[in-house]
Each structure stands twice: as C-alpha cells, then as structure tokens.
Amino acid sequence: MKEEKAGETPQWKNDFPIDKEEATHVSRREFAKFLTLFSGALALGNGAIVLKSIAFPEKELEGQHFICEEGQVPMGEMLQFEIEGDKVIPYILIHLEDGEWRAFEQKCTHLACAVIYRKDLNLIECPCHKGYFDPKTGVVTQGPPPRPLPQLEVVIENGKVFVKAKSHKA
Amino acid sequence: MSNFRYSQKEAHPNKTNTLMTGITLLLILLVSIQIWLLYSALNNALTDNFNIALGTFIGSSVLFIAAAWLLRYLPEPRKPKIKE
Image (tube, rainbow over all chains, first blue to last red):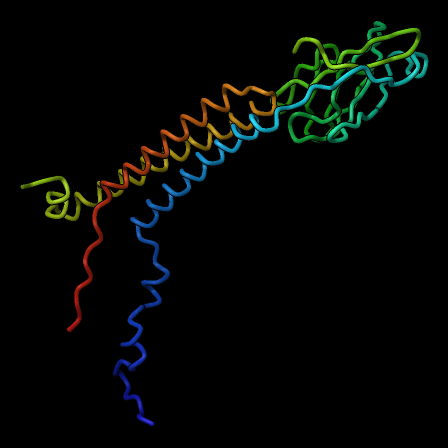
C-alpha cells in the first residue's frame, strides 16, 4: 500500500473534487432562486384555495332541526347542541334576557376554541384569548377573532325550538 | 453587439454586488406581499368570499412571474479558476 505523504492531496480527492465548504455554501444566486421557488409555492397555495372553494363550496344547513323544548333553557342561559351533516358542527343556543333566542356556531373564528355565553357580561366569550362577541348579532366586540360567529336562525313553534340556515347573511 | 449580459460581465464587482442585493431585496418584498395575500385569501375563504380568493390568486401569480423574470438579471457566477 502506498503511503500518503503529509501535504500531498490523496488520490480520492482528485477523483471527487468537491470541497465540503463548497457543498454546504448557499450562494446569493441560490438564495434568490430559492426565494423564487417559495414565491411559486405561495402562488400555488393561493390557487389551491380558489380550487377548493370551486370544488367544495360550503353547504348551507338544510331544513329545520329540532333542538329542545322552550322551557328547557331559562332566560340568560345557553344550551350546547350539535348538528350532524358532512361533519359534526357544535352550536350554542342562547336564550337572551330580553326573551329573544339566538344560535351561533360554537367555534371561535380566531383559533376554533369553544365559545360560551356569559350572562354577567351579556357577551359571548372565547376563554382562550379573551375574544368577545355580541350575543345578538355575533359580531366581534373585542379581542383577536377576525370574523363574526356564523349564525343560525331560531324558530319557535308550539313551544319547541328549531334552528335553520339564516335566510340572509348578517 | 453589446447587450445587458455583456455589460454585466464586464462590470466592476461592486456593481454586481449592488445588483445582487437589489434583486434579493426585491424578491423578499414580493414574497412578503404574497404571504399577506395568502393570509387574506385564507381568512376570506372561510367566509365564502370567492372574489377575494380569485383576486389574490391572480395577484400572487403575477408576483411570481415578476420574481421569475427578475432571475434573468442575476449576475452570472464567477468561473472557478482551473487548477493546473
């Protein structure tokens, strides 16, 4: 076996003339190309949102759903219920202190925590990040949620509480 | 005939550096705008606002084309010196 002399380049280095430093170095050209690739990925992601909203449009709730008897929810209280469809969506039914009824989706529009009705504040509260919604309209009154709570229309018939899709968007 | 590429090769390394920095900064700006557009699209898609989703997609695609077009002006890498 041939001995390697100190300071002499070994044969294998001549066969594979790639320096470690060169291989791990990200040049400014490569960085610019990477940024462009990332830009393409963002444009594609935006396209995916468009495709999704064309291919799978949100379905409105169909028909009228029975929830409970009118007497089951005292004034100022709320009832949690679920409606099963393609997916199970949790809702809250609120009997406001002025006697009106409201139904909202229970998922906070910020990070989907479960919201609750606070009788003492007369507000719907998201306990995770202290987001507050108006219990009459569902609009955000305070905190980080970006959109109002999706709302259902409440129908009272013969002492029974039903919900159905809201006829117009709030 | 002299063209952009020819002049760029002949340019002083300082000019090449400035061009490179300019392109990188522009690309970062374009990508930042795209992130903002994507964020708006996501938020609005959740409330069934299709027009915003479509508008941001068109905007984002235009920005991507602009970013790809900017790559034309990247200075060519310096040729490694051939070892004897």
